[in-house]
Length: 267
Image 1: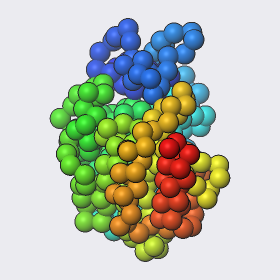
Image 2 (image 1 turned 90 degrees about the vertical axis):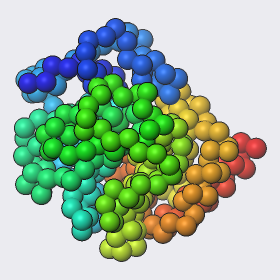
Image 3 (image 1 turned 180 degrees about the vertical axis):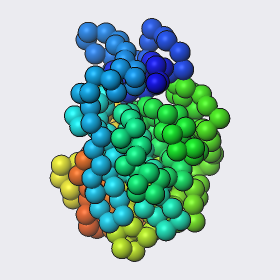
């Protein structure tokens, strides 16, 4: 059973014991007032407090996470693309039951992660399903557990399959990435955004932040560039990082309208 140290606050797994968690010490995250705390997957699995959560989130999209939530609490998305199942983002908790559920759904052909806050136990996932993990090279410094399964990519876009494309927007982190699925929403397109493009309670808009917990706004030039990069893409829905954080309609216009509003307020 895996005993590599796991940060209790952000869920990042490291290759060896250490006193600090660089991701939590960065200004985009935080170390709790009580200080740095650690656990590991073996402990989480044995204490029985977490259970796998697998639920449909939209057409061809299955949410994957735990109940109750662990660490930051994001859920991943199993994309049931024509080219094969693909995992977008990563949930920190993984056990044999969850591996079995995903295997029953057809397994996965690869993993791509939006930014370092969700790297978590990516190596465990890669080993469990014998697949690569695609990370943008601009965020290489945040990898806590190096492994041959990690495939660094460069530039603005990467086709990870014939029907799935990664787009590096640079929001939140320099390697901040979203995934475009043209066949999503029954052919109207879906944007899988993590919190690079954050789905907010008002589903008519999205948010752009450098730090969410510490309320640091993203730089205007970065938001402007992100909107320009997304302008050519068609997508009806936007799937954020949390359970049911979904913009169901008019996704393309929601992004463009939100960027324009953001730039108006910060200028």
